[in-house]
Length: 227
Image (tube, rainbow, N blue to C red; front, top):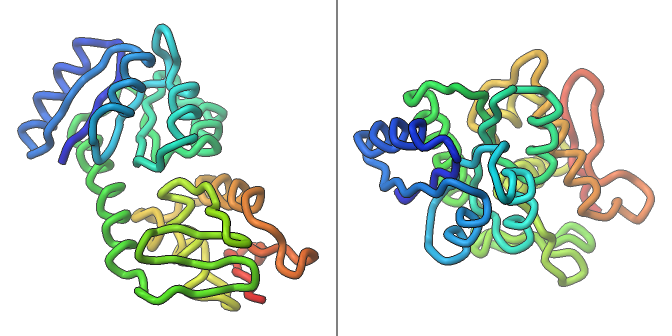
């Protein structure tokens, strides 16, 4: 599993790299956002771990530019661990986040969880294309199209949307959706799903151009509205 670690803290990179290598990952490092983004575009990686605060190009700008052309899974690192940093990272398409300093063992576990849920989602996808009005789900290519045009989704957004599509017309609880799409339990103050679903609502049209495609069922979860 090829991982790119992008962080200007060389000592931390060395520590994380040694540990992740001992866990079976093939780790490469870059120490600024510009070279990190260039490396992601040039080479093949299965996941990137990106620090927010870096010289040249910060992690948020890197992620924003990466998402224009790639749905590569990304875990963000933030020294402050502030709520706004996490929300902004999720809105830009991050798959997970961790505050710094972080435990190398926990980082390895987070990496495996992100990769596992992506693989599990791909394996569980029904191989038949499914249409919901103007939306069409193409499991084999892991894409969603609207009016024949691809919808630009991150890997996590795709996972969330397909779980809801699999249960079209049914309420999916926040706990079920978090476990199935994010691979983790939903905490009482966790806003991760809310942020991703808010992003999805901006990317897909309403059902019949009137009703929200993804409806919130207060205190329970969400429901995907088929046409």
